[in-house]
Amino acid sequence: MAARIGGTAKTNQTGELAAVILALTRLDNFRPIHFKTDSEYVKKGLTERFQTWEDNGWIKMSNKDLFKKALDLLRRRSAPTWFEWVKGHSGDPGNEGADELADQGAHDDAPTDLDLSIKPEWNLTGAKLSTLTQAIAYHGIRERASQDKRTGPQTQLNLARDALEAFTGHLETDPSLWKGITHQDIRRPIRTFLFRAYHNSYKLGDFWAKIQDYEKARCEACNDPAESLAHILFECEAEPQNIIWKLAKELWPHGDETWPHLSMGIILACGNLEVRKPRNGREVEEEQENKRDPGATRLLKIIISESAHLIWRLRCERRIGGRTHTATSITRRWHQAINDRLVTDQIAARNIIRTESNYRNVEDTWKGTLKDERFLPFEWAKAKEVLVGIVPPRPPI
Ligand SMILES: [Zn+2]
Image 1: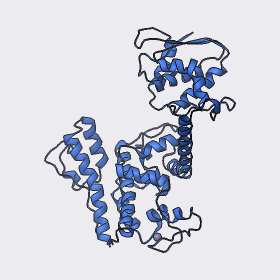
Image 2 (image 1 turned 180 degrees about the vertical axis):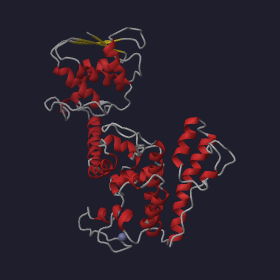
Image 3 (image 1 turned 60 degrees about the vertical axis):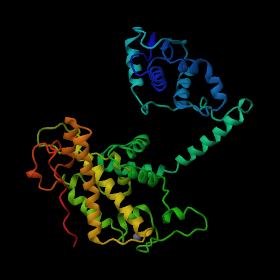
Image 4 (image 1 turned 120 degrees about the vertical axis):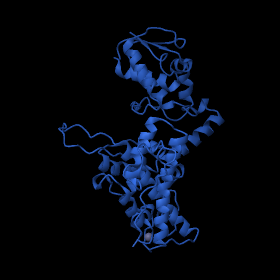
């Protein structure tokens, strides 16, 4: 049987490898396969160079997980396998079923849905000392060290996953949670904030507790014995969290049942939050899920991420900058933070992303939050002369 990979779709290394893995996973081990690939690197890698790479412990290799998995699958095969290099877009008809597999593989930018686990006896780790150069060994040490650092945030990932599942009913994978941090609706400084929160790298009370002979620092504001990010964001009575979360919920126009139970996990997972449309009384099949509400989903990501980040910023201003905040100034700052997002959206819609779908997106996001909304002209996001703002918060008591 012939399996032609690549050619029509994006012909990068990752795509080609993903296609090989996908094909090998789905086709019988005892039937011969003829792969045609337009990646010389993939062909040579799987037929010749892998020996050297294995000897060097896969150090400095991009796509090493994919190469290792492909080799593992190839070694399990009991029938002959050929690799042939073909020129890209050579018009070779190939095998339709395999083409489809190749397309699936090649369109996957990050093929996270591929099972990359390897039989333990084939998963060679470490490098052969006889063939290892000093330079490669050095890179190997650096790779190991950076891997170890990544095991730290596992607790936080689980926290985020659990909170998200309770809210959306979906279990997210680690890669999709990491991806959520850099979601386009999360502003850059907040991405950094979330990244550091995942790695527990802010020097709070629980940070000092990890260091020997260092006493856990108490919360300076309320003298609580355990200062943590969760304490600052949700518990500390001396922090502005009470006021800010109240304002956030007051602005939320989609009802209590779509507002998450706030926790550290929800903050960490704010880029993955999702709101579904309510059922409108019509007959719906039990199993069927409600439709995703893109506007509400986007607004929730904005409100939650901006509010959490503002609480943190105000805390830093007070602890490091020595500033004090009154209830009125906290309220004003929060209103400004959310309003800035609305203004940014409006400016982008008028000047940068002038597409119908973006006008809809902006209008859907802010629906129900705007001041004098019923007096706004139809399609306000398009109209140059219209100034919008969110409903001003009620003055604090
Ligand atoms: Zn406190």
